[in-house]
Every structure is written in structure tokens, then in C-alpha cells.
Amino acid sequence: MKPGSEALRGLPVVGECSDDLLGRLNDASDLVRVGPDEELFRAGEILQELTFLVVGQVGAVHREPGGKRTMLDVLQPVRPLYLAATLLGLPAPAGALTVTSARLIVVPVAEIRAMIRDDTALGQRLLDHSLHETQILTEEVYALKLRSAVQRLAVYLLGRVHESELSPARFVLPFEKRMLAARIGCSQENLSRAFAALRRIGVETQRGVVLIRDLTALRTFAAPGHPKNTK
Image 1 (cartoon, rainbow, N blue to C red):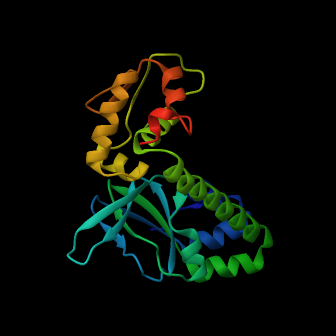
Image 2 (cartoon, rainbow, N blue to C red):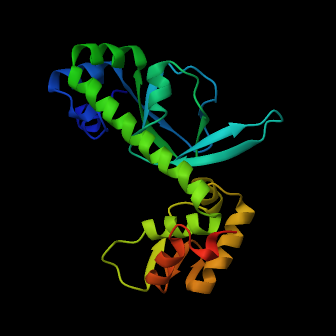
């Protein structure tokens, strides 16, 4: 099934192409619907298609020799999966496993490369997108070094709150806690301890609902170098 021009226009990078290029992209692409717990590809594969996650959640996973899978991150739409590795022809840095039902648009890498040759603006947009992703990953790596798991959880929770929102703030976590542990880079056990630590400054959770009673206190706690976050 073809995705259609409207769906393609909603994609990052390629959505800004001309009508002619979008038509060409539509002819080469496929719209795929998959259920939860479906393996899209494994770590180390050389990917022949660029996969855009349109709807749903995909886990970045590492498969251990015994078959156990470790969740490294939760990827959410709308985004291309492992753009740099795919276009460079490098091994996928992690596997991809659907967490929920998902809708994907897949495009042959050969067609993307041909379109880049024909449209230099597309190549520039792909470069800009890749550099932006690199910047985000660099910030996440530094956060792992500068902040404890408790602090990273505080930063994540603050990111779910609108700037204009006053205390108390309330929202629903977008996925279950084992996925949240992967998102902030810690084990489930450490995540439970982190939530327990945040209760002391007014963060409450019940069945996926988070209540932050004092946003100012949480922001202070989340700041790099805060003495309570050095352990």
C-alpha cells in the first residue's frame, strides 16, 4: 500500500520536497502496519530501507547472546529510524522492536540517494536533520555524566510540563515505567528508587499519573551540580 502525498508531507526532511519528488517518493515507498512486539530489524544489519515511524512506539533494543532483549530507548513519531547508519550503509546501532501497534513508511535507500543527487536542497535538509540528532545525542551523553538517575528523571518529568503551567502540574506518562527507565538510561530498580526520592520534593505517581506539587523545587533539584544529585 502506498502512503500517499499527504502522509509523506508530514514526514521530517522529505516532506518539504516538490510535488514531483513527492510523487516519485510515493511510487517507491510502502505504508506498513504492524502489531506490538514485532521485530523490524536487528542490531548490526545493513539496512536497505529507510523506515519512518509515523504512529506508535518502537523500542531500540540490544539482543544478548542468550536471547534476552534489553530496551535501550523508546522511539516516538514522527521520525526516521537510524537515519545516519541507514544512509551511510553502516550496521544498525541497535535493533528495532515495536512496543505498540505502529504505522511505518519505508523507502528504499537507493531511491533516497538518487533523490539527493537530483535535489541538493534535500541533501542539505538531511544533513541539518542528522546534525540536529547528533546534538541531541551529545546532550544526552553529557546528561548521563552530569546528572544522576534521579535528576534525569526530574528533567524528563519537567519536560512533560507546559512552561505556563503552575503548581501543581498533572499529566499521564506516555508509556509504562519499564520504557521510561530505558528513556532516561537506568534500570527499573533505579527508576523505582528515583521516584521514591522525588516524593520528598512533592512528586507523586499513581497508575501512570504524575502529580508535581512544587515545580520550582523540582527545577532546582534538576539543575546540574545540585548537591543532592551527586550520588
